[in-house]
Image (cartoon, rainbow, N blue to C red; front, side, top):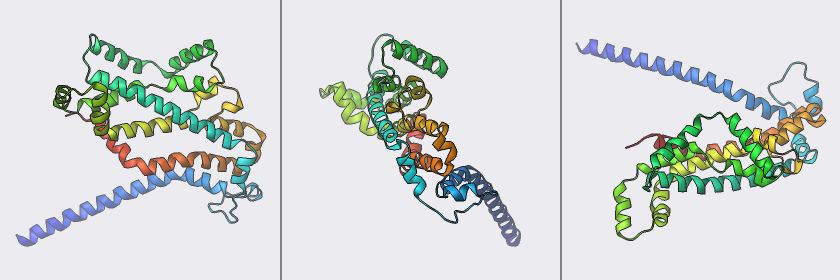
Length: 289
């Protein structure tokens, strides 16, 4: 009996080990497929202009790496200006959006007023409207207000999000209502309760929303491309498109790749630093109880 049990345990462990090997092998292959385009972008950015053009068969290593492409990316095109514009756009838009969604989520989660459920249902229904229709409406509105080619015109349509309001409302509702009632008995105002209790408790979700909004703003392309044709207001995404369409981007592919690497790096670093908080915030916002 002991021998049979030992044999079964050994067989079970062998199957588990084989399954783990197969699983990690598939994950490794998938990781290589996903990461290869980024590796190729970084590799190309370190190749010299002559070396890149002389390759009839692509090489997977840079035999003569150079940083000249990164210098060209900042000197041949106004990449620093695009960075500054995007940084200001991202910071201002994210800050304004946080104020709007925190106040809205708090109102829907804790305050009692007539028609609250109907208004929230109307908010959720807005998520069913295609983004293309919203872009058209925003474009007509901003144009009528004479805000094309202005930072205000870039920022205003992005200062709220129904999805983020919903996510934060669900998180606020997980906080026991007894805390709110006790705070009201002590004479605490709604604003003070929000700042001192709800925001600190919901910090992981708020951090997640902040990071996701930063990524969204940094990658914003359609709206900035539509609302501005002034290079002084271009963001990095539109700047890269301009570089690609210009003679510089078509002729000097390694420098073009260097510009793309520089633009992608901040988001990659941001995600690697806060990836655990992002996952924790999303999972917490999706659970109730």
